[in-house]
Image (tube, rainbow, N blue to C red; front, side):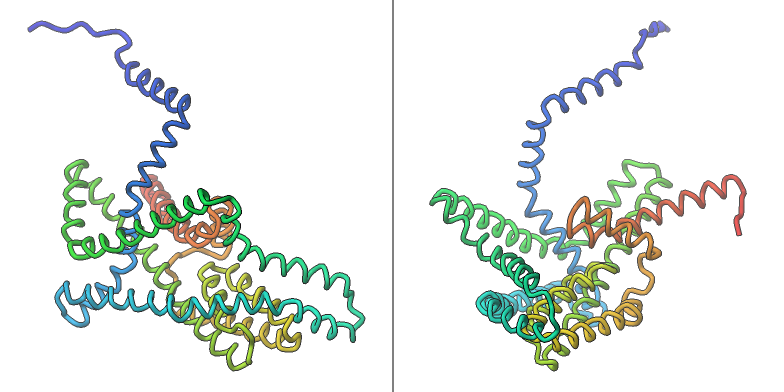
Length: 367
C-alpha cells in the first residue's frame, strides 16, 4: 500500500479560505448588504405567512380540540374571525380614531385657553402653559404633516410612496393566503423539520435541539398570547371606565392604553400620560379622575389580572424584565421593548441549563 506524504500546512487551508471570504465580505459590505436586503424583500411574504400562522395556530388547535371539527372547517372559522376583526377595525374603529384626531387638533387652542383660565385662579405660570401647549399642538400636527409631506416632492415621490405601500400591502395579503396552507399542513412541516434535524445531527443532539425549540415556542407563544389577551381586557375596561367618566376621545385613549400595556412595567405609565394630558386640557378636574382610574386599573392588572393570565411564564425577576425592556428598546425600538422580555427568558432557560449541567459534572449541590 502506497502511503501519501503529509502535505505541510494542509490544516491552514480552511482558515485561509475563511479569512479570504471574510475580507471580501468586509471589502464589499455594501454590495452584500444590497443582496441581503433584496433577499429579505423576496421572502417578506413568507415571513408574514409564518408569523400569521404562528399566532393563529393556538386558536386553531384549541378549536380542533374542543369542537372536533375537521381542519378545513376549523380554518374557515379562524380566518373568518380574523377577517371580521379586520373589517370591524377598518369600517368602524379607524374612522372614529381619525375623527378623534381631527377634532382634537381643531379644538386644541380652545382647550389651551380653558386650561389657562382654570389655572389663573392658582397663580400658575401661564407663559409656561403657552409653551407647553404649543409643543403638544406641534406634536399633534406632525401626524397630518407626515401624511401630506410627500405631495410637496412632486408626482414621482408620491408615485414611489404609492408603489412602496402597494408592494408591502400585496406581500402582506400574499402572506395571509400562504399562512392558510401552512396551518393546513402544519404536521407535515413539523415532520419534515424533525427528519432534517435527525438526519444532520446525532440522535442525542437532535433531541436536545428539538427540546430547545420546544422551550422557545412555549415561552414566546404563552407570553405573546397571554399579553395580547391581558391588554385586550385592559383596553376594554379602560374604554368602559372612560365612557362612564364622560371622558373625551375615550375610544382613542383606550386603544393607546391597551396597546402600550403590551410593554411590561413601562407600558402602563406610557399609556397613562397621553390620556391624562389630553383630558387635562379639556377639564383639569376630570383629568385627576382619569389619572386615578387608570392607575387603579393598572394596579388591578399588575396584581391580579396579569398574573392570573400569564402566571410565571417568563420566570424573570423585575430587575431582568426592566433590563430586557431597556436593552431591547435601545436596539430595536418599540418592538424590542415588547420582545425583549421573552428573548431574555429564553436566554435565562439556556443559561440555567448550562449552569446545572456544569454543577452536575462537578458533583456540586448548592443550597
